[in-house]
Structure formats: structure tokens, C-alpha cells
Image (cartoon, rainbow, N blue to C red):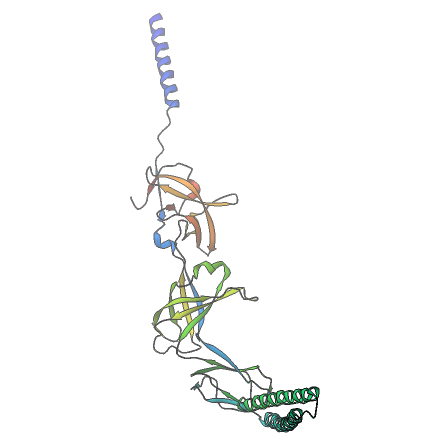
Length: 359
């Protein structure tokens, strides 16, 4: 009996030792299969499309150099005109009266000058005969100089009046297209008031408005793609020629001019154009991914990025740029990053995974 008890005790001790050893050993974690998305180089190119209008590079606001009532308008909006064409005319009667008044002043000034000349000649002779003192001669010399100055002033005023008569016709300074008409026959306009806009049709470009947060994307000399709503399947290359130095006070956008080096056939002033601009690639690029890839912890948005050296996952902070119904555009990732796009709340830091693509 004593031997049997010792044997039973040995068996119990052995089982206890074996059971204790089993509790200290942790089973190896089985890698789970995850769905991923690889951030490629092209994901860093975010294209923005801006709607613009075809305009002329050189636009001239035309106005009369004298004021008056418009008698007639000889062109219509959109007409093509040649240099020297009379576009508008104003009533020249008042201008002619001023011109005639200037001529009359010239005649009067000439009479005064002739009288002063005659007196000066006479007193020079008397002075030579020592009949008058030098002070008297100086007075007549001064009178002649004043009369000559008044005559020259009258001649200049008369010439200005003659020029004003020619200003009653508004003449096209160059060939182009009438893009705006701001005055009509019968309207009284002042000197310098814009009545018409003439666009030189030889060189066309596209004007777009870019918001201030995308201003770094539109650098001078950058190439862009231009399409036209009225010209189907027509694409052309444009170059950013000018960026306004100051934003519009109301829209807070910057005017950008895009030069079209090879305008397509049928491209006309006023057409609607679309300009596609791509952002520069950065080390931290923007990428589109499904909302299921986002792992939110508190106020920070993160994603699980796969370390391909040992197939483990690690959290990486990202920043939202645009949120859609089922997708989101984020920054903070690098080209080549592999991001888990499903089951992100079942993962933990350093967990082993298998890529669904590998399986």
C-alpha cells in the first residue's frame, strides 16, 4: 500500500508540473489577412480644373478726348474693325465754336503784336537820335515782348482747338474686335469716359480665377491643359503667363492669364474654356482612399501602414483635405506606403498581417 501511495503522489506531481508549464507558454499569434491600398507616385498629382473665358491679350478701353453728346455709333458688339475706322462721333458744334474763338484770339493778339512792333521800331529811331531816354525805350521793348508772348499763347490755344475738332470722331487705334459698348447715341459723355472696348484679335488667351489656397499651383511658365466647351474633343496646351499680384476684394480669388501658343481652329473671343492645373509632387502627397481606412483616436486621424520588412502594421497620422460620401483625400503619406483599407479597428500596433494580394 505504501508503494502504491508513493506512485500516485509521483503521478500527481508530474501532472501539476506539466500543467504549470502549459500556462507559461503563449500560443503564436496567427497573422490576419487585410485589404490594402498602395500609395503610388501618381497619387501625388492632384488635378484642379478651373473655368475661364477666352479674352484678348491686349484690350484697349476707348474714350473721347473731348466731351459732348454722341451723334452716332457705327459698329455693333462683336464687329471686327480695322485701324482707322470711325467707331463713334459726337456733336462737334461746341468744339468748333471754341476753335473759332481761338482763331479770333490769334487775330487780336497779332494786331497787338504788330502795334507793339511798330512802336518799338519808332522809339528805337528816336533813341538813336537821342530824342528819348533809354528808360522809355525799355518800356516799349517790354510791351513788345508781352505782346509776342500773348500772340504765341493764342496760337497754341487755337491749335488745341483745331485738334479738338478731330477728337470728335472716335477712331480705332488698331485692328481688332469690339468686345464692349458702354455708351449709346444721344448720351452725353465726358472726356476720358470709357465708351467702348477694343480687343486685338491677333493674340488670344484664357483668363481664370484661382482661390488663394491653390495659388502655389499656378506658377509663371507652368504648362496646363486647356479645353473648350464649344469645341468637342479639342485639347491644347497653355502656359501661365500672368498671375495677379492681388486678390479680388469680393471673390478673394486671383486672376490668372493663360497664353495659348497654338490656338485651335474655331477658338473665338468670349468662349468658355476649362484649364486643368496639376499640383506639384511633394514628399508628403495627397491620396484618395475609402473612409474605411481611417482609424480615429481622439482628435487625430490615422491610418495603418504596413512595414513590408516584417509584415507588421504601424499607425501614421494623416490630414484631411476633402471628404466625400465614401472616400476621403488626405495628406501625410509618402509614395509607396501600403495602407490597410478594411478592418482597421481590429488591428493593434506591431501586429503581423498578410496582404490579401499575396493570398
